[in-house]
Each structure stands twice: as C-alpha cells, then as structure tokens.
Image (tube, rainbow, N blue to C red; front, side, top):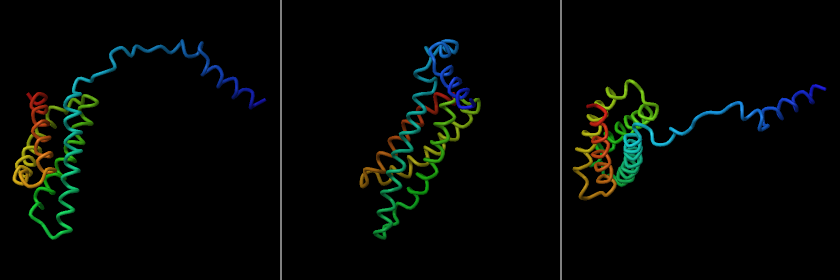
Length: 141
C-alpha cells in the first residue's frame, strides 16, 4: 500500500492537471539587464585563461618575461568571474564592483599590451580587457 501512495503522488505531480495549477509568466526571461557585461566578463576570463596557459608554456622554456602578465591575468580572471556572477543576478553591489573591475582590467590590459606584438594570446587578453572596461564603465556611471 505504501508503494501505491508514492505512485499516486508521482502521477498527480506529473499530470497536466497538476502542472496547470503552477503557471508562471516567463515572457521576460531572455536578455538580462547586464547581459553585455556578463558576456564581456566571461570572454575576459576565457582570454585570460588562454594567456595564463601560454605564459606557463613560456615558463617551461625558461622564459619568465611574461611573469607579470601571468600574475595580472590571474587577478583579472578572478575579478571578471566575480563581476559576471554579480551582473547575472543584478547585485546591488555591482556598480562598486565594476569600478574595481575597471582598475584590475586596466592593469591587465597594460601588462598584456607589452607582449601583444609577440604573443597573440596576450593581445587577445588585452583586447578583451578593453571591451570589459567599456561595459564596466556603463555600470559604474
């Protein structure tokens, strides 16, 4: 008998009648208010991770000329991951965080730009920082 009760409960939850009593308006679900900032921040993380990986390869070959680049890229990826999350759920602290993110991305862009002519991953990282800075300025304003 106990099994029958569980089966009946499962049927009532999955039945159309049970489902119709739980209607939600999903019409506003699409682009989020800060979608461009979220996308720019996640792109920065992706480009930063590629830059760091490239730096590690250079380190294995005894080239430490990009050590500062790797350091600031690590800071930037951590910052941009946080910014993307705060933007995704429209945190009331987002504007303050965006100001910090601007500073972190500016430092990363400056350092990566030093290596941009020689290393494509550094150029891509620097360019993504510029785009993220632009989105952060819209939020911080």
